[in-house]
Image (cartoon, rainbow, N blue to C red):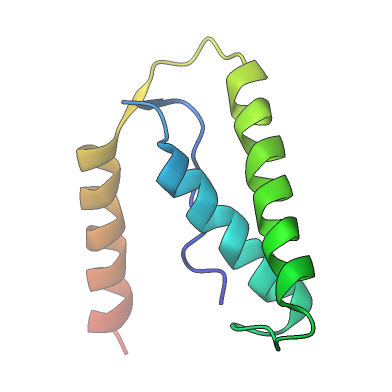
Length: 90
């Protein structure tokens, strides 16, 4: 369920609000144990997603590092290479 939660810090260009929202949604899904809440829990579920996204954005805005910014295309290529190696041996 948490496969869509990615490292969002220290990328060029910075993480978008959509990426932060997607990570928050995946987190709430994992913690709550459901991908789609019942009507009775929908308001609480959506409020949690919004609050976690908000706090996550503040965290990303406040983090500092001396490391060079990572390139999204390079990181995606590394992930594909790791995946190919993992599934080629299976």
